[in-house]
Image (tube, rainbow, N blue to C red; front, side, top):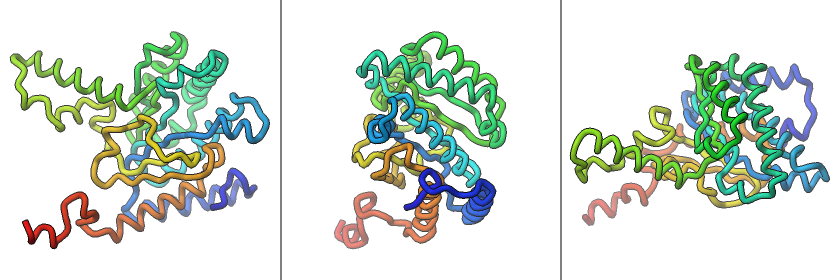
Length: 281
């Protein structure tokens, strides 16, 4: 699949194509309301192009901006990006410090030159254990959330530092704490519905589409609770994240709309059983 990241196109033509596509996909009424991204491959991209790892991460940020703009223009309400895992703290001190500085720069860019946030009315939400982050980065993140808190058209969840297991543990602890505050804890108070209500993504649209780049077939501890819901589509791509751009994203959105337009109500025998199985029961 060719992409604007690798094939030069006139900027006016790109804008025309983006606007035409986004209007068309919105009109279909089959737009994923919540899209998540595992943005993998920045380091391999840097090695492949003989550039510094930091430059690879910077190239990944450029790709993220382009892809998110198309998503929001097409009607996506929530995007969740896996920016930094708690496990990433095992990397070298030099790379971690570079990533923290880069994250700070990008957050400042969003708040001071927030064309994307203001154009699409995006509210920034930081997801994860931010107490593990440098104080100056925490302050910039709080500032970004404060500046965009009144935006209501769309949401951008930035997961940093984050793990899916940590989110589930957080939800369990919060659910138990709320139940204890109401009095004696009952067994039926800790259930799927209660846990779902205490996830970081509670009160947002359910996850519809998860995209991972770099040719790796694993979830890497990302949105483990959300991705198990029925109907979530997972797209695994061979390209590295900086190589992923709007054209590939457009193709994925088209496939999603096509599938949702023609899929049957009983989409999987594993979900509800096929008709023959139901008769035998």
